[in-house]
Amino acid sequence: MTQPNRKASEYVKVYRFMTEGMGLSGTELLIYARVFGFSKLNGGEFWESKRGIAEFLGISERQAHRSFRSLVEKGLLLEVGERSLPNGRITKRYEVAQEPVRKGLSSMARRYPSSPRDT
Image (cartoon, rainbow, N blue to C red; front, side):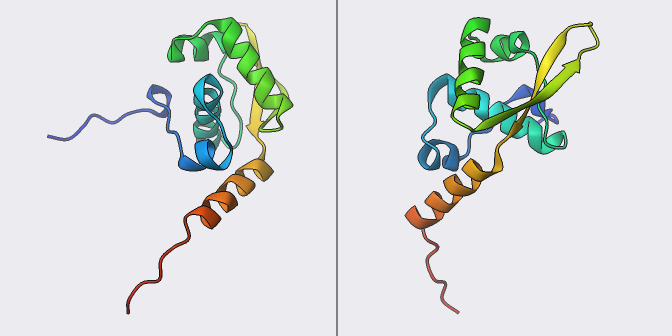
């Protein structure tokens, strides 16, 4: 039996470079992974409301605000403007900063070099 088609909004995918390469954990890791996943699908931008991400992750809206602020201060996310939601609310738009991703991936490549294959 096949699994139903899952939408990106129904899950968060955490990559090893986020934990080991970038040192993320806890709520910041989950929020970063959610932004990263949406950014890949939406042309680089994330605009889900703090309320929406808090409900999805089962955290307080205040904790979502703190984690976003911390991720921006660390240079992992970039605040790039605002977006009007269909309900009339305004939410901030974010992008994933590319340099930390490159560094995280590079760190992982050094830590786990590919083994030569027999030919």
